[in-house]
Image (cartoon, rainbow, N blue to C red; front, side, top):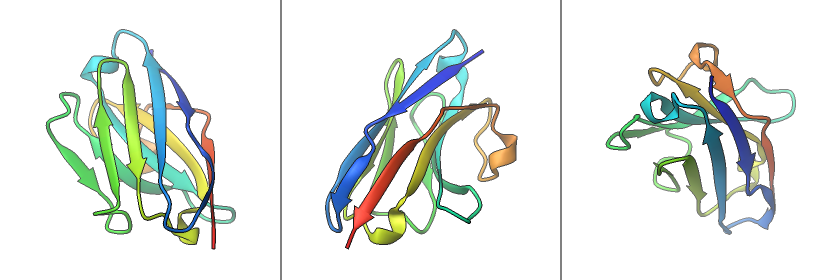
Length: 120
């Protein structure tokens, strides 16, 4: 079992930055790939980024490449978000799975989400 708790969301102006954190507990965390997804009202959950269990490999959706950075340490995965745009407004979720995928349905564990709102 893996338990995930996100934090760090909030309201920011366009062009600003936020850093999301996802605190993980459970013995399996260190062997799981971690990912970030987001969901805006009326839209499907969207893949953002993923990082391998070792932290040695990361992948990003085209919509955030060059602006967002995913990282992890022993018990936490982070999402550094720079140059934010109003279109980035959504609830952001972290997820864990044995293998990373861009498909939300393949991830085993989810946090409760944290709201990010970017004003224009």
